[in-house]
Image (tube, rainbow, N blue to C red; front, side, top):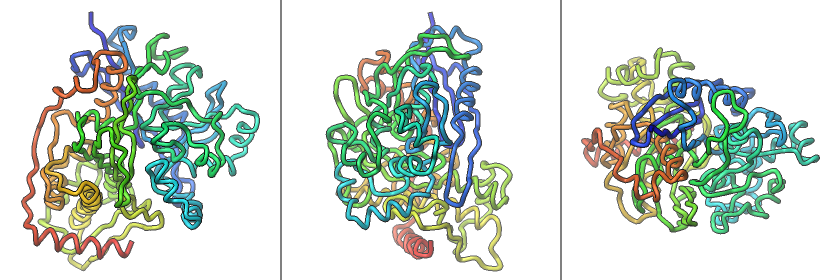
Amino acid sequence: MSKYLLAIDEGTTSVKALLMDLSLNVIAEKSFPFEQHFPQSGWVEHDVDQIWNAVEESVKFVVENIDAKKIIGIGITNQRETICFWDKKTTKPLSKAIVWQDRRTADRCQELKNQNLESTVQEKTGLMLDPYFSSSKIEWMLKNNQKVSEAAKVGTLAIGTIDSYLLAKFTGGVAHATEASNASRTMLFNLKTQLWDAEMMRIFGVSDNMLPRVQPSFSKFGVTRGLKVLPDGIPITGMIGDQQSALLGQACIHEGQAKCTYGTGAFLLMNTGSKFKKSKHRLLTTIAWTTSSGETTYALEGSAFMAGATIQWLRDGLKIISTSAEVESLASEVSSSEGVMMVPAFTGLGAPDWNPHARAVISGLTRGSGRAHIARAALDGIAFQNVDLLQAMEKDLGGKLSSLNVDGGACKNNLLMQIQADLLGCKLRRPEFTETTSLGAIFAAGIGAEVWKTVEEITGVWKLEREFVPQMKDFDRLMRLKEWEAAKAKA
């Protein structure tokens, strides 16, 4: 009798449902996009009703030809710092979600930096004071949205990252929970005690009765109840933030293994094992996952906010390509950008710069510059950001990384991968199954459902598809990195 695992991969621009059997054969998969809302410059919001509709539509598609009662575990992975506000009793949203890319609280974060609070924040939460994270978004909403503030006063307000909201919807409002990889992105969670931190809550005006309980990443969070697309009683057995999910899906389960995911942004994570490693080079310390046996795996992380979103801007903003896939062929029309540089700081610069006020720059244009040079410069700009991340990571580690696993939609762009290998001076390894964020959610669900008894049991799944070896000379790489630093100074 066939049994199944279902992954819900809720990203920044779409929701994907992936159904696999216990031998990890893909039974069905389906993605549904949802709208991005930009009410003001620097603001980014999502309508969580639209997200839930995309979840329902994607799940409906993947289960239509199976007996859904044979699903033994659901895994949820999600965009992490995006924060939702809903009524505990009805699960009705009280506002749009504020997305991780949103920069409306940049001034508030600077104010807290001026109060010399950043070292306290980093020591407790592993994070830097930046509007990227959830806490300042929560504070802003409590002060500026009447529905949210009134619900807080009467005790009916539920706050959580997307995983918590989806769990509430899947369980008919019964469960209000999250797990440590998502909690560790809110700037309210103490990485050492693994509890909501009283001082952080006081700084941002948050009460613990609004927040979800935190439980192991691989555990039973609740069961389905009252859904149109699934029968009652299917257990949700795994939840994990999207970048940690990709680390798991890449089978980077041992200390020192690293991956870079090319999605809307680019996210580089390195497994640091059971060690809480505080970065000295402005990277983030985060929890990768926790197990029901009490084990915690940590990671170092650096984030570039604009990767795939840079290509989307070429398509939708500049309109020099019709589809995102066209960027590779367009950029391949020239052998280099011929001095054109793009710093894709459309929503500020992430690690290690942490400059929320930076803005995108295209420089070095001449009369001879064309669409292809700009496309090539965009790919360069994505890759240069990851060089900054990896160099900071190597300084923290005190050694060079020999290889880096890559995944996500843009890793299918062979030109981008070769540019990345050249600029990093590091071998890239691309797996056969590149949707590793979804695969990580399958693993999380399976471990929680005891399909696999331990995390180590998943290591035999990863298969190499292609390696990209650096071809650029060291001197040329150094010159290019100097050009990048000069361009970044203009952002």
